[in-house]
Image 1 (cartoon, helix red, strand yellow):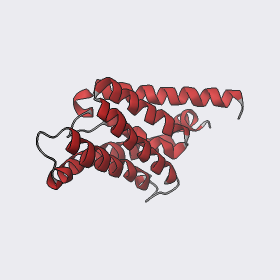
Image 2 (image 1 turned 90 degrees about the horizontal axis):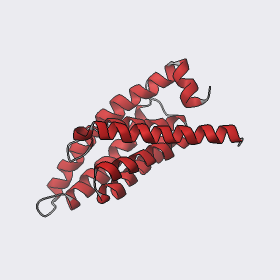
Image 3 (image 1 turned 180 degrees about the vertical axis):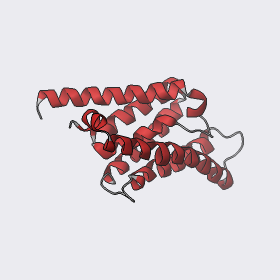
Image 4 (image 1 turned 90 degrees about the vertical axis):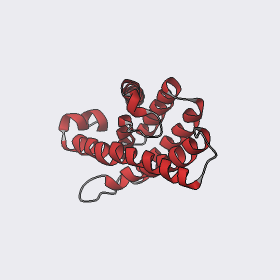
Length: 173
């Protein structure tokens, strides 16, 4: 790996982390809580373009949770994003009707289970956790992730893939 490539990659990771963090903080009412549409989660689809995006998105999530949420969310929310990005990267070449829809499913599932069913149910419930509560929280978080990742994230991937200028930024073309 040459020095120019590694510096460019590092800067790209830092920029993605910064964008993720700023979008979460600017849209704070929508980014945190049991019912959330964390728009920045659309960036979880960027690992479709390379493994380096796993680092940028995960770091952005860590920073956003550290600045806008709780220690519990720093641990579990960031873990959910890391798992989601790793799985998205594994599905990077899979397309449905030319769209990266399969790669958008891991963030939905990881966040629904880790953040919704576990984190919110166990750590943020006013009463003893129940299975019904876990299912409800998983569904609400999953729905928000579906909007962020499967709608906005897939659209972002399509935009990058179909725009030469965007491809040069994200893919070193």
